[in-house]
Image (spheres, helix red, strand yellow):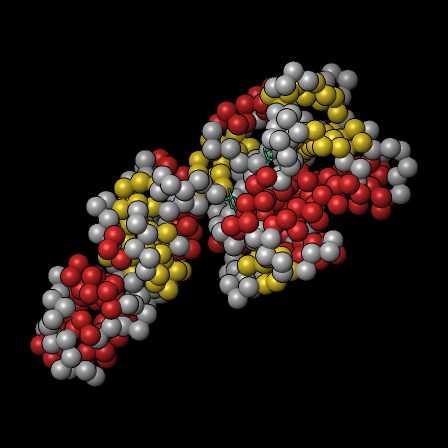
Length: 416
Ligand SMILES: Cc1cc2nc3c(=O)[nH]c(=O)nc-3n(C[C@H](O)[C@H](O)[C@H](O)COP(=O)(O)OP(=O)(O)OC[C@H]3O[C@@H](n4cnc5c(N)ncnc54)[C@H](O)[C@@H]3O)c2cc1C
């Protein structure tokens, strides 16, 4: 019994470790060989750089209102898989593997040591316990079913391998050619496009405010339902921070199709609507009538940002509060709740974090992630059309999917 795993990243390595555990638990005595084929020179290269080298391996899910809000693609599947292997299961697995974890105030989970090396070491120990053999420098270029069952794998280094079961965990690829090795299987794939990126703005009217962080803003693309909220970071190039990354995730395909040109509306008061902002402004100006408007800074904004916003709204910052016309205040409230900018592109200086698209979810059984058209072939991780917003949800998807595949294979082997 030979199981081949293509791609030694988060999902592939965790699948190998969990397979070893499940097979040991099943008491199966017949030898099962697990082979990992990795195109790169070493496994887990991406996991090493996750979370800025600290590895945000999952999330406490305490602030998650709905699975849909964090998994723009694959929410239904993830709802099911999280019941089988949740964030608490992932945390228990890594802690059980000797990695103490911490939950940050923003609900992101990291190793207490603050280094991804500990996560890599734990996965490596799990793979060793499973007896998995790792073959680096093996880029799969073709996978084809054999008439007698199982699969033949061809690699770009000229080598070939055969396996009874294959798990594809090749991750996201920004280029459609990254899925080319699956061509003989005739599977439906969704064109890969980047997700989780910062945006540049036409003329960047806020460039002088680079480095400013604004808590709790709401951003949206007018004319669509695409909207997000959270902290906004103003950068040299444009806008970033959790709110923008989340919007880029929700709008990944829309923005790709629009060639990264679209309007953007910002509500600088977050969840507050125009009337509430107006009430806020009336209270602020009414209580300090002699002050200049530029000195009546709303508590969640900085003085420089406030002055810039006033100017953009066509209101003189050196107007005294008592001289402000009621209609001007109304206009100000209307603009602060819906200030529009023009998106001019995707930030060219950032590598995309994850890929939206991949093998269509309709191609796999949701419980086992086994391919419907090709039995004993499984998919896990970003190669499937599943991706998430930032916060540890992408790695959680890799762990949950790898666990589902490992359980399914172990059960099949136990019943064989
Ligand atoms: C800079 C950065 C930071 C990130 N930080 C976080 C974070 O903190 N938290 C979080 O949840 N997510 C984070 N992510 C996303 C997360 O890393 C991925 O979602 C996750 O690694 C996906 O796991 P995977 O196993 O599907 O793919 P990967 O981990 O990418 O592994 C795929 C593996 O397959 C190999 N491969 C590809 N094609 C072939 C082939 N044809 N043959 C053989 N091998 C192949 C690749 O070399 C790779 O090793 C980050 C991503 C990036 C780029």
